[in-house]
Length: 399
Image 1 (spheres, rainbow, N blue to C red):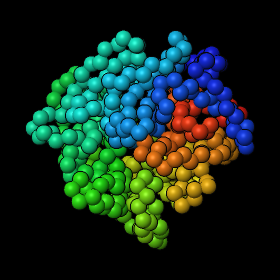
Image 2 (tube, one colour):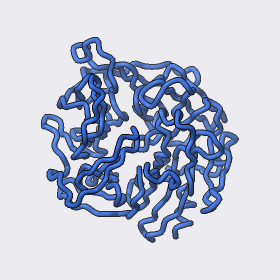
Image 3 (cartoon, one colour):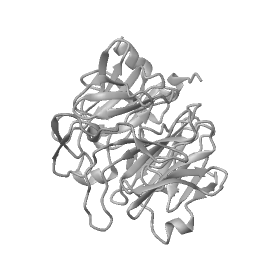
Image 4 (spheres, one colour):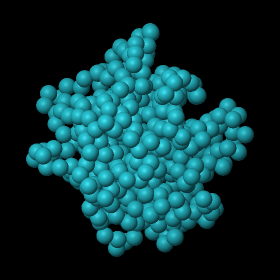
């Protein structure tokens, strides 16, 4: 679908900002809804398909943190206003947008809800974990980030209660949730395959034991689970040859020595046709693996990369770099695979006060609007807000 980007970018809700080194122009969203505004987590584009609605996270420091206490707002580019919905208090990075309807879904408590973008649109209950699973406990998460199955019948679940994570699916029609497998609490980041409704990508991630506070090490990041089967790792062998130092980006934990293999993988996402899983190999760059054959390819050699995302075809990549051991090095960059050239969208990501880190302030750049726009969180001008960069200008800059 073709979007009139010129009309969108000329909205009074956006202000142009030029990077002083690269000259790339991004468009910053006005902070009309909250003092702290963020783009969605990179696996969940937050624009409606027609380009009218852009959903964002909101926080009101000192209240809330990355796991809970944030809410949603929507920028309506037709009406020229940003509407905040305090009733959308959500867990983790759970919100997801239905591109066709403009509705947002989110998790709260043991439940999944949705609402439309209109000021007076009501909230609708979607589904919930059953009482015999919750057992009077408060869930840590229902879904890290909701994704919809290829047949549009279910939302994914990676629900953490106590020391267990329950991988499964929540039917959109309200039928009972399906639990595919119960695993230890370190599994999260579930994502439905874009083409196979019976397949999910999940991650073995670092987690805090809810009783002891200990953080067990991770040695094999990426797994697949098929409905009716047990989860299995994409890489069966966890050894990677030489030893490297692993740094913790999120919790500031002491560094540790690990094999330079699957324990150094992270921030994965599905390729558009479902045949590839893209991921970061820390210390190396952006890779993909064809999960059915095991073929792996280093697409972007980028040793400081933290997160990345690709367009549907896999021909364009956007990434951020926030290495914890290099505080003066941070950026958001773009790769045109056809030419091999890169350009910096943001040549430096200003670091804000440490207390703001509780909201997980990373750029998390993503392709959206049918790959016509990059959306990311920015900290320029001393504030946290959402920025948009037209992909066409980045292709021109890397031609």
